[in-house]
Image (cartoon, rainbow, N blue to C red; front, side, top):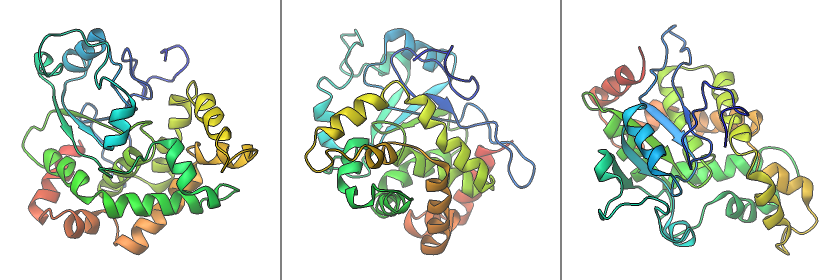
Length: 273
């Protein structure tokens, strides 16, 4: 990943991490701005270099990481934090960064390839596969998302990084909830979501090649391309689902994740300036 090929902002070049960007800078319905330096989103950071970690802490102010990946995904990556040379048992501790494993699905593999396989009957066209996948994420992710919301609903939470494997689906749903909570327009939320296509452009051919080798998807090139994409209409239709089936972001955070109104108000204040 290089800064020459990705627009900055919102993308930030952090050595060893793809699809890294700040969710700040977007305007809300009340003409406020989402704060920069509060929430970052990215793909799997397990190959981050010491230089990348140093930049995250010293330049970006990241103090906390929330990892939405499942156990099978962690096991597949091998040594979880490869290429971080330190004798300390927690490679983040010397940088003042705390990592929390907060899986949306603890046992189910939910990387982009597995999502495509799980919802393969939706791959032909349209948005139904994504809406169903994101409905499942919202239903299963309450405990994981609650930890992020509570972290952000404290005084001076510091910068945090949220990620899954690609930084697309589980991460994208969490970010959409934060944007909806503070009143970012739906079109803007969907546009920000679609930036993942840029952030993962160098990895998508690998995802597609692997999927097409699977007998369940063999020959379905258009369907596979659809399921590894981040199209605006998929997020727009998912926002409709969030509002109709979960009562909107604030109701979801209150009723599904258990935050009280005071916590929600503090969360909002921390997110906007």
